[in-house]
Length: 172
Image (cartoon, rainbow, N blue to C red; front, side, top):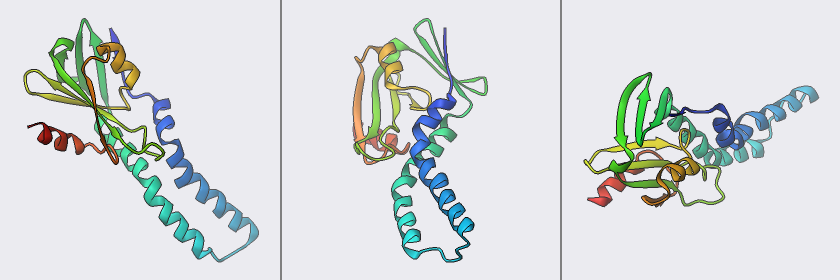
């Protein structure tokens, strides 16, 4: 039996660049301003920080959305069965053989801070689906379980969770 939960290092690995930008850079600058006794905050830095916030903010927002979606979830893989629990209650259970297709929805941006955010949409033979984000599963885990047979990719600018609805509509 294999149990998978959200690991703290996975959080840090994904959100480090956004945290660095949002928290550490402004704090270091403000500390320097306070130490030097300056009272004016350069307008160019405010404009630059707001402009870059749009770019780095997408990764930060994706991380919060993924965390809220998958918090308190646990995946149990046992005897060719995948069980998804939330707070100890079963919310989804399916056999590996019941999976018709796995869609890896990810970003087509290769140098963006949100490039590693992706999620997996499991399409089952009975018409149901199950979504798990990269905070719980990564490509290595999926390939280990399914041996890369059923995985297809669908790329978007950023892999927001509402893209799965668009993908399902496109399939109909």
